[in-house]
Image (cartoon, rainbow, N blue to C red; front, side, top):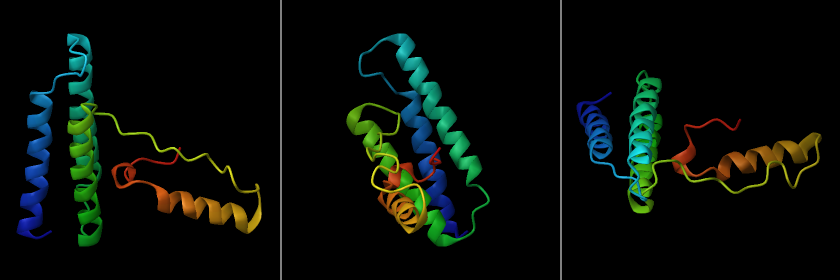
Length: 121
């Protein structure tokens, strides 16, 4: 990892923690605010630790883009949780053969950047 990449990642990490420190729930209920703050902190620490050993510059770049997208979406909508992806699971494919594989590939390609770190399960 280059020094500039390391600086960018650490800057994002600190930005997430600053956002969590000053986070206010949209409704303003104290319990909701604390729950959302805990979610932000847990999600950030989990994802950053999960990706800590990455060395491929392209993969690191995609993770940084995902983090920036999730920050911007969360601040814009005042909701820290990832937005749902509205694709029916295997809605257009039969259960066997090439059509199923093609449908799975299309679903993977259609996955938004802010959900790349989440499994399909």
